[in-house]
Image 1 (cartoon, rainbow, N blue to C red):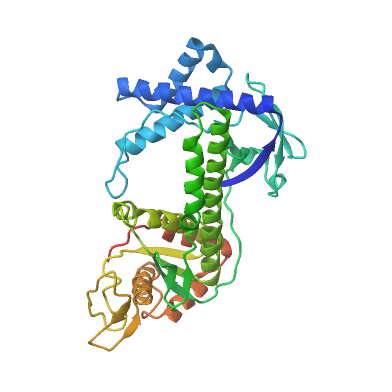
Image 2: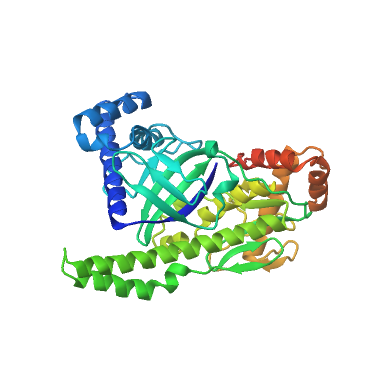
Length: 407
């Protein structure tokens, strides 16, 4: 699936209608959640039927498109399934809660219509949103209208946006570079690769903390319910949105640079949720956005047909990358010194080399044609086995799905 996003341009009356549709989506979602709480064995088909019952019972719910009501029920079903069914590691999410600040409404294949030039969209349900202009640089004309499976109206602090979910995959051809790399993420450096190169952690939240504290004080000093308090909250929310976009921009560019420069990328399979329990490091870990970096590595690995593997993080910092001897060290020790072989390396670089070794072992298991444990043999095998860009992308996407490897 591929998502294209545009900013919307319209009148205040139209945006007010979008807000009404969003509130209706929130109402239906909460009603479906209450229905599940009263009937724990309910299925998705029964939730969809319950949407029709709500439309007959509440007149304002009838204004929303029928498929948009079903999409709201599907949101509830997804939250329920995440709680009921454990993931591959046996973990379950928290029980779903009632939503009080919904910010989007989702349509499927009906209730909207694109203009011939694909620069505006018309919504035809009972809320009379009308024609909205779309501002953006992404070319929607390159895709058929049949590929659009979802249309989402999204409200942010700086305006309203629209997202198109397309049933297509992005694949770009690129010649193999013959390079392999292991990455060790951290807080002082965003990541350190197996070649010893470091990328500095930007720490966007830490740099903006002084301004955030000032804006938060301005909110608390305003009278509740006043327009000045609303303006102060808007300024605070805009600052948080700016930090979020800065972090995403940095992570996307870093992930794309790594994937383009290497054929095999090995990364630690970190349990970030458990690491956040350390209250001394939780803010810095969240600010580093390791999980977001991992997701974009997976995405660009599929796009460019590269191999992205994840290895267990246990003892990657303690083991010597040259002889394998285990050298225990505290977090304050930033240099790896092995007494057996005399290897002296930066702690993160040593960990990155261990991650690369484990990643190559996994690739060698999945590609039996590669002989030995060298980077050159692995890269050569990848080049020989690549008959076309499409087949190579399919094989890489298969490897990406193999999470949490065990040796």
